[in-house]
View 1 (cartoon, rainbow, N blue to C red):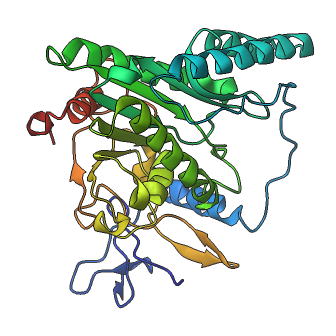
View 2: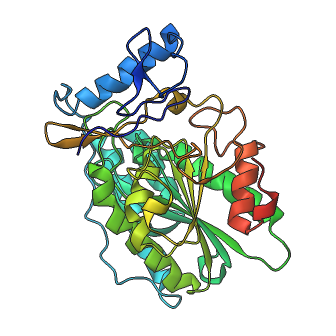
Length: 351
């Protein structure tokens, strides 16, 4: 695949454009681009270095992980077996916590001890760890939000991911109309790439994760009922995962938050019946990363079109002045709009 359109904030590039004074292609008939500021220039260089990491792997050993038991293998959950599913994964998390403590990893032990008191649809303490936690009464929910995290999310950093789920669940509980029941599913169901790694600039991890996300959505609908309204809220690299799964995913809404791109040129290219939303905070550094896709030694690097650009065709909503990690901050504009999307109050979503 050849180089695709570059759609960055304040950037435009395609084959056939004319050159500006600094050699940057410009749209035909337009004035040359101003020379980029040092900050923007260095961020562009950093983005290219991340891409180059695919060809030149970064050195350094991974942090040793504590031992953990193999995960519980259960049949897909149903309303009748949900309590048994929760109990089995809690027991597994409890054993993982004990083993981590004996290994001397007290931080991991504390995280797993907390999860051992939670409602878990899945848990695997091996390696960087996987967990699917449910907040609320899933079996009786009318509206469910599934959170899909981005890079650098594992059990060692699970606290910050869980905080986003708690913030959303709290707001949904307060603002849901009388008689509307809600639940939040925090899905750490794939091995996320590191922010600086050979995997973060390619779709490899997303391709592996997509079937697991489809399975999760299928399980949620099996428990909550096929009529439940399901929203996927996909952050950063998680938006690449959602895009890869979208074509075979029974979702009603998909929100792309701080997305580096999806690999598709347009929202229609995701081939889903779900409404596609997109947002980026004014302080999110992703806005300064060039949105490109190119072949590098046979590997596709980058994710193409910017989801908040008009050309992409998503429903763009306001996210305020927040940074890359602030989309679920309590009291934020973005959290208010995400709550409205999950509750189906789409006319109240601000842009």
